[in-house]
Amino acid sequence: MKILLTGGAGFMGSNMIHYLLREYKDVEIVNFDDLTYAGNLTNLSDIQDDPRYRFVKGNVADSKAVDAVVKGVDLVINYAAETHVDRSILEPKAFIDTNIYGAYNLLEAVRKHKIPKMVQISTDEVYGAVMEGESDEESKFEPRSPYSASKAAADHLCSSYAVTYDMPVIITHSCNFYGPYQFPEKLIPLFTMNLLEGKTVPVYGDGQQIREWIFTEDHCRAIDAIAQKGRLGETYNIGTGFRVPNMDVTRKLMELTGRGEDAIEYVKDRPGHDRRYAINSNKLRTEVGWEPKISFEDGLAQTVEWYRSNHQWVDACRTGSYKDYYKQQYVDR
Ligand code: DAU
Image (cartoon, rainbow, N blue to C red; front, top):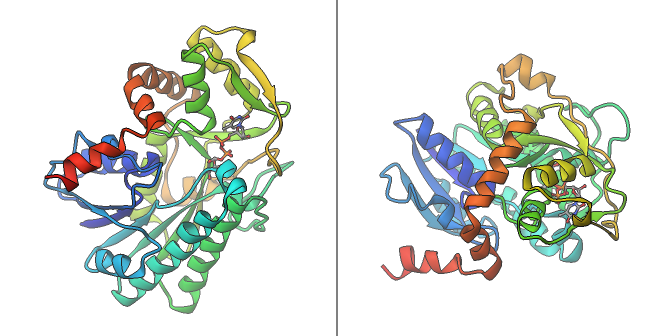
């Protein structure tokens, strides 16, 4: 099976490529990625010479490039996205281009080349803040940041193509994930690195905002299961039910890194900060038969250990030197 994975040099995409190459002998993967700040090919340096893997540099907002790379594949998984809420508040345009226009280009190419299946990776943030209970797949979209609005728009496009053109699209809405290779701007990698380096951690507002967490490996298994057994035209929530306030995550990280109260720094809250996310993933569990396997305790311990042993990777992210790797491996050769 030939799979086009967009955004494969990012955190989630690169974890998925590792997962697929580990799980399947006969798979052929094309990684289409524009190597923006979050795209890091060193995430894939261990498999770059695997004959089942190929990298193509390109932007999903470029319709011609998308058309060429989509042609002839059996499955498209769209991981390409601008994902950081704070960045979307500062500069929304890239979110519109990549998340909305990118999804549109992929849908058009999938339609034209009659690709058998496309999985659109999306987020629980499209449901907005859920103060009580859980959002299920029928819940109303109430995005509240430019990021979540751009993902919601792309999801609406995907559902409309499924209905209007009878297209084989499946949408997934996941809770917050964490694990190795996550760019050190998100809560868990940022706080882990700051704590390991003896710095303080910037807790937004009162730190009582609630998030639901999934370890990256469990997310990869969910996408794989959905791609194989999910019904076309459907949406599946991916969640663990493990929901905690940010302060609990912060304290667990402080324990794992041996830091005390002096590490906490309360800072100004994020504008429009969603107070709570909670998704119901019964549909995925009953229809597709997926269950998370990794507890938050284990996943977080593994993640902290990974960042502790991969300090160079983080330093390269911070200085931007990981970009040199692309030039050495793909341009200068
Ligand atoms: O829910 C899924 C979503 O999770 C994904 O769709 C997004 O792409 C991903 O960025 C993530 O969004 P969040 O805004 O929840 O993730 P983030 O790691 O930025 O923040 C998690 C929580 O921690 C949130 O309540 C804000 C808070 N926070 C975050 C940062 C970076 C802080 O208190 N301080 C910080 O410095």
